[in-house]
Length: 476
Image 1: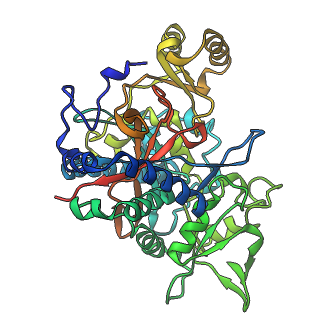
Image 2 (image 1 turned 120 degrees about the vertical axis):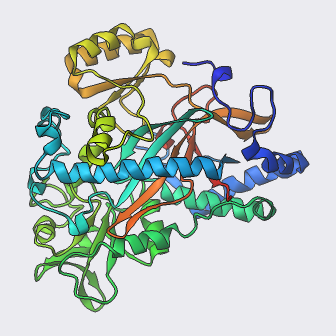
Image 3 (image 1 turned 90 degrees about the horizontal axis):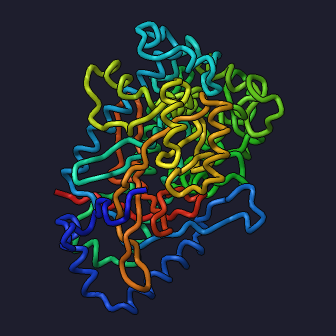
């Protein structure tokens, strides 16, 4: 792993001078008594605990729910930086949506030899029963999260695409609300773009994606949750409440007269748009996993008949695949006719014999990820792994090379966190949230900054002990 001192510090330059984006914040910070900051740091924890902002951790014997650590030092992005990022994000999201349409129709990118067909045939996330079907409005990816990392003043890379069911937007909103409540004077001194209208923008974007069966009036939007034991249940309930939408479970829904309808005190009512937070496999027991009790029997038939919009569309998970990710520069160019504005991280596909040989020879320097992995699980960070862990991973790679990709260990930028000893640098990434509808692409300014709270750690995932920060995009 790169040494901490050689990474790009977003707040301070190499001489210890404050970078322009953080100038006013650092002046404010320097004026605050230490005890005031310590007290506010404790207050933030109390606020999150009272609000119930927790994250469920699976497979552990300890308490099921954990508080997601919140750091009160904001991550600040200039207006110019954000404009540049927004253009790159929009380009990528347009390409992703065009790519998904093509995969389920003529597969021109495969015919052109730009993408191997095996990546679809061997991919569990590619759904044969979506072939030939066009979702309402032609939108596959209604809500997208694009994970970005920074390595220098003008160097941003896309680390991952989250086109299935990206999570974390509730933490972005709660982080801002907490900061505004704790430090109102800061927001009068520094002009920061708002994120609080995201739920309203989400509701408007979803309502613009009504299915052919919509009969007029105000569309009925509902959020489908697996239930209270899901790791992101807090977010499901939060977004439904903030949008003024219904929060439903599979047991609340049934197919009546060709529509998916929800149980109400006045009988069953049709749903026009279902923002589902249930994976494809569990969405419809008649089509996918017959043992699922989380979905709605027959919903896929209603969907294909034009009776409901499902956001995100079933089958979008193929775009999350890390082997597909390695082809994204080609995908962007194929569908937009432009070079990617935001580059990928260099990626070795272990299914390729030459790449596999290189990866096996350099395991101690690389990050190796499962093609379908998420949440920081199933990966090897070579520079921090023991010889035993590397040896075990070597065997996994040899047994199933097609299941892995490898990337260099990037020198991720750092942003300070608040500690009792003062500010200390920690590695960060950024997940901006994008809404897509027939009316256009809407990118919320900022997003969720995740921070690796352990010194030197590169793993920012909440499930792996990471925390979050408020992300500020400065106004011009």
